[in-house]
Amino acid sequence: MRLGPVGDRSGWWVEAAIAVFLVVFPTVMAALGAGPDLATRILILGLFGLGVDLIFGFTGLLSFGQAAFFGSGGFITGYLLIHNIVNNSLGALAIGTIGAAIFGVVIGELALRQTGVYFAMLTLAFGELFYFLDLSPLRNYTGSENGMPGVPKPTVPLGFTTLDFTSNLGTYVFVAILYFFGFVIARRIVRSPFGAVLRAILENPERAAAVGHDVRRYKLVVFTIAAAYAGLAGGLLGMFQGYMPYEALSIDQSGEIIVMTVIGGPGTLIGPLVGAGIWTYLRQELQNIDVIASIWKLILGLVFILLVTGFRRGIVGGVVTLVERRKRGVPR
Amino acid sequence: MIEAQLLNGVALGSILALVALGLTIIFGLLGFVNFAHGALFMIGAYAGWVVYTQTNSFLLGIATAIVFTFVVGLVIERVLIRFYYKRPPEDQILVTFGLGIVLVESVRGIFGGKTQLVSTPNWGAGAVQILDLIYPAYRLQVVGIVALTLLVMWLILFKTRIGLIVRAGIDDALIVNILGINVNRTFMLVFALGAAVAGLSGIIDAPILAVYPDMGTGVLVQSFVVVVIGGVGSFWGAILGGLVAGEIVSITTAFAPDFGQVMLYVAMALVLIMRPQGLLGVEGRT
Image (cartoon, rainbow over all chains, first blue to last red; front, side, top):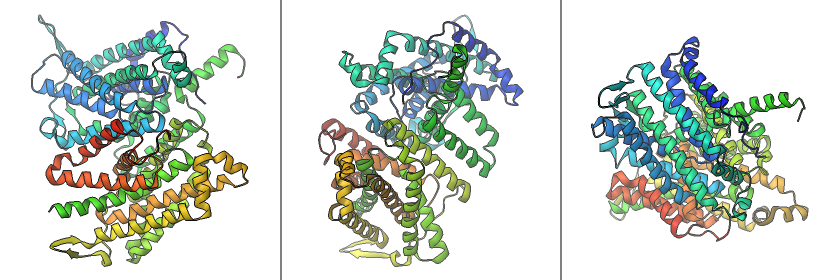
């Protein structure tokens, strides 16, 4: 039932298209009646989802604990900036990202001892471990259920001048630049020999091991990369909101990013962004009405079940398949 | 003080054991983890609570929870789950996870998101004295109800023909099918039975936990921990794992309240490192 990733034949134009999209995205959102803030939030989740896509869409690892890295990256970054330990936003983000990656190595080392169902259960449980660590033992640092307020908006001191991204649009630009680099790197990974091994693991782990690849080490590396993506996105979330919420560590957060990835299209890299766009836009528009708020999530849940049942490559995968079919002119 | 915490651990652990048992029998036979198990726990609690508040009879509430979740389990299995037996485990996890969202949001749509307190049944009100310890009666009764349910489940699984088929099906569904036994029907019944056990756990936990749409999430994760600690697919493993988990949470909470939940996951990691198959799991069983 597994299908190979899509869009890996095309060249530089995908990156160019993403760059153009990032430039016009705030305008498109404005036309839909939403400000740059919504666009920023969607990009942050899209960046988070890039990591999820690398482990799930391209390697077949279904982790329900990604919020652990999203949250820990966010809290580390936020803590450094609030307490003036680091005053360069990029520096704080880098440390938060590395911190999340280190947690990724530790949890990956333990959880990857198992596969399939067990791996999913273990990542979920480790995610909860981080959630409860945040709520109680670390509450003096993380603020427990109050979260961590006062995370400064992004600024990058260069010595002679300071780049200021503190306006709403400025924050969007800051996030968009990082998303672009994140996307390019993810695409490089996917198209590299390393990515080819990941795909071999996705299609048949036993065969990948039989031809001599150390499957667990490959999995650990990609799991760590995904944790780094999550940590970076978490750091950006804190800056963007000016506040790091404890919910970033919750199971719901881990589940939501999976739902977004699956709806948008796993194994496509832009799928998570599309899924995040749909999810976030609907929630923004409908969340204030109590009854409807649950109905939109109910409908998305049903769509999710339908996609899992009948169309494992999500919306983006569907579009790509249609385009390819038309190009070839033969129905498959 | 410590005696009370030990008893709390037994009460908490017995509920976890029951939830984990439902999870483990479904996993053992059908081969996949039901991520909607927490949602079924919640549905049982709501169904029982509605009847309990209408009739003022908690026993009727319990009966409703069991029957209702059993039927919901049957429907789910026929409409959705049965098409997933041959799919990869990731698909099975995703579809039951999606199902969980649908169930939780349906309940939120009907009842709203508010937390509803559930009063202790009148036969469970008050406290009992054990030596010099005064302890809420209902929590002891919960242990009794769970023990009774576990006994019934044990009789079903180990002393009846259907239990024999289930256990044979866990070992080799294909051979059982060749022997002329309708494994499909057994699968359906087992799924519904697992759902009913989750529903029962939900309603008996309701007076302790209160009722709200997301009440099943925490229980689901904790029952995963129980299954990992006790050993996947093992009847006794679920019970032992439940009690161990309950005691870990209660005893840690007594000494270091901040670490009650954290220790549970630390214990799970330790079991995983030192005995990956779980305390009572069989090696090589995946």
